Length: 128
Image (cartoon, rainbow, N blue to C red; front, side, top):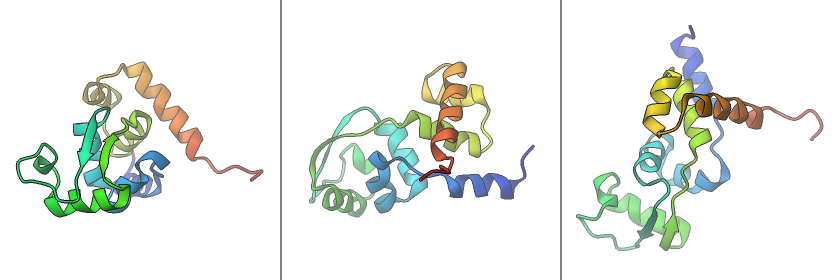
């Protein structure tokens, strides 16, 4: 069993994939995870002048929505699902494979495979 310090170190070492880097820069990692779980796979409109009561305002503040719009250029965007990254993130938070599978609506074998592949992606190359 990993200690809390080891799990926190793993989370700190996670490198978000490029397609969500702008979200992490603006929102931070924890809020980006919540955002991906709520909107991943869907198209959203990011307005520089967001309105209260929008779907996004249920998770993000109006200032955060506006900052995302500024960072991405505004308009319509398809939010990536980033399931391999989410699998690694939840695994680093000591969530069981079964719990991750239920949370992301995928099979346990897919979770194991994604965690393995994501670990390989994060491995430093000896030849670069």
